Image (cartoon, rainbow, N blue to C red; front, side):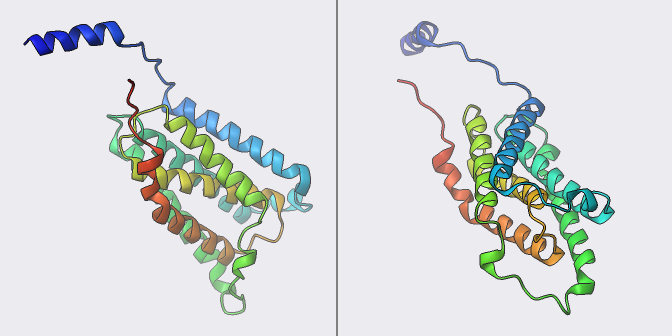
Length: 214
């Protein structure tokens, strides 16, 4: 009892007030704005694709872009939800049906050309400038936000932030480049992002840790 009383006295004397984080939706919106800023930065040396006015009226192109953006936002929302104890289970899984539907759309739109379309070369799979800038930058912004919260599930948080950053980069790439529209190419890109998320997810144990104050 004496130890317990001493602990209570120590906590009441040394405990510091904790600033409450904004709701997950607001944190997601802030991350999305920062990611858009990275896309604008990428356009400073690449510009916007010349046929953008023509492709924005293509329903299939718009659907694929909408699914890419939805996958990025929902994966980001799921990652943020994992950093908040007590969130609903569906919030952490809502990204998965969108990814699967995105892959289904790519499969259906690319299947007629599969017989004549060659597998893309790995070196041309992503833009070597835009993709790293947008994907890594977006992932770092999201990681910085989640490090301020509770590392409840660090491995899943890491995997989801990589999926979110990669999907956001795919969305941004197609606004900048006109040679990354092939459905087969996009499907390979999505699978590569998911694989990278699985492989690097254990690094979350290093990146997201409970902080100890001395």
